[in-house]
Amino acid sequence: MLGRVGMALPHKTHRDRAAPALRASTVGGDAPASRRYPAGRVCREPGCDTVLSVYNPRELCGQHERPSPFTHRVARKTKLGFRRS
Image (cartoon, rainbow, N blue to C red; front, side, top):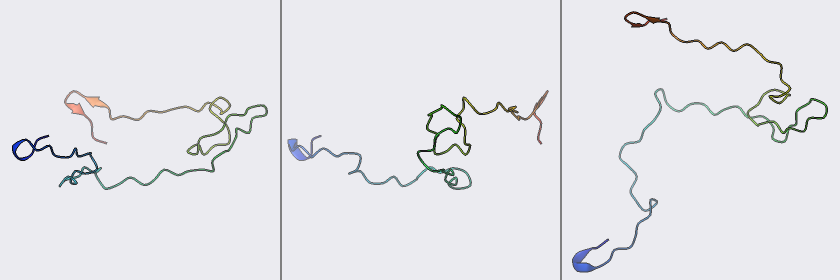
């Protein structure tokens, strides 16, 4: 980048730039932090050595957890658009 009459200006990195005047945020503020569980936990199924995620509240890994029904709830669509709940 050139300054006055051919003088090269030092290269600026993203850290050298001024902070933007506006910042994006989520509606309603910041989301609360996700709950964490102790690191290093192992699936309690005998013979399984899968290390559980710090975000997994259960004592079993995905392979040994009992299947549970999953219900996906969405607004029903009407002729005019989506119905309000």
